[in-house]
Length: 624
Image (cartoon, rainbow, N blue to C red; front, side):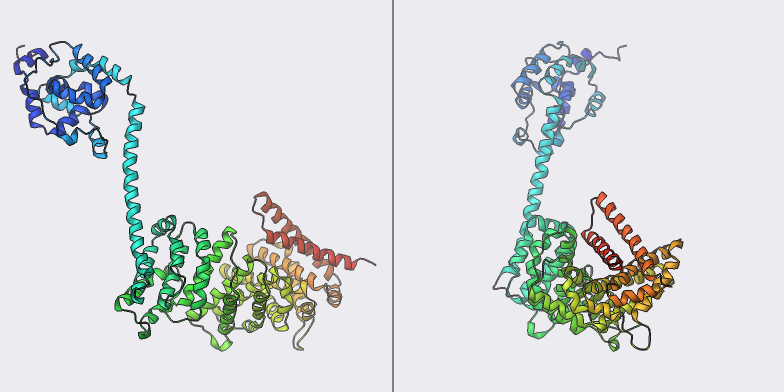
């Protein structure tokens, strides 16, 4: 029994030796952490009640406030004398000093963590012979008194505000460093006294950073794209102009809100593009030319950009030219405008004229195939730019109309050719004609030439049978080509008598295109009710467009007479029936689109036009 000491006897035996030794060996920070902890642990800790003395309690009271101080005193005074020492018993004992910086009342992130003490200190004290159970029991009343004044919710809110303020401070510092980095780059670009090589290095550094989507996002959030537009207005050499266009392309490719950026950068893209469309040499080759005086460092910086430009431009490394970068920027901007339905600033007539000049100059003859990757990519880009611009631009003025009319002379692209490049150019050219004639029906008079109408009709006749015989990928390509050609022919036949008359002409070797199209229609009608596969469904879609074309050609009296006599005298009746079924299909598509709030205005216009053509033919067949 003598070996088991009560708390009182243990206290008398060792006096203040044990707690005093722990206090002297502990660092001031350790003692402060152990002393403060959480609100509940402050009252549970025996160190507060045994070893720190009245002077240290006063330091603690100042930290908790006068109201907490009074409650804490009452809790200590209500404890038995055998458990808690009073200030008189510890009088004369030196109090542990606390460094001044730890006495500060400011809340910092590190002190926030220091206050998160846990109960692990209690088993440690018990291992030194300090009993805590009775002390915890006597401090219950004090805990209830204190928690009535400081709720847990208020404490958590205070902690979260302190941590949040630290994160906000760090973010502000990060933003300041980011702006400082961008300012440093722009200083090289904007300095009028800087050399061409120095400016080139500044643009190269900016392009390298803009290849990171996260950087582009912050770049746009800070509004630096407007500063970039201002510093690329005038006075740039060909290399700096090319790198500026490269920076625009990287922003458009990596930006989170690229349609907004396209709106702010669009005027400068048009301005810079006009000055470089004639330059087809690679940027790296240009940088090495002695006349430009680029330093070795500038040449190396241009070379380092090649992989970053290749990630957003689909050409081989030696051929990243200023012209390609300009066309890529224009195309990316047009796609964003079209996707978001944003208004667009009209092309300068000089820029549109230069684009048409290039496509006329670069359109290949049969002997030119296969084309170089650079020439082919350039042609594809120009056709795509003209197509998308014709779709989203406003009404065309006189100069713009003159430039588009010149495209009717490119009928040589329909010359049969085994190369895939030739086929892609034909499709791109047809898409331009289709959209231009959709936008301005008056253009049909310019495109209703025998060469162009014959070329389009030849595509329909030769490729109609191939839809079911090709593999799925090639079949889809063939299907799209035939539908594009049919749509363009419908536009021409609907708006011009000349084009309708061309279908009746024969070259003396083969039947007229009208008779050839009737034979195609006859073959497709026989299998329309037996559509059991995807290929057969595709054939039915093409047959529907073909029926609309034949019905449109029937607006010509002689053509209508020829059609009525075909198919054993049932030609016109069969074509009308097929066209009406096709119209019902389009009306259903339009209703479904309206139900899902995705109504297509182009689809609505086509439905109205089909209905109008059918009505015209029926009225012409009614007895007068």
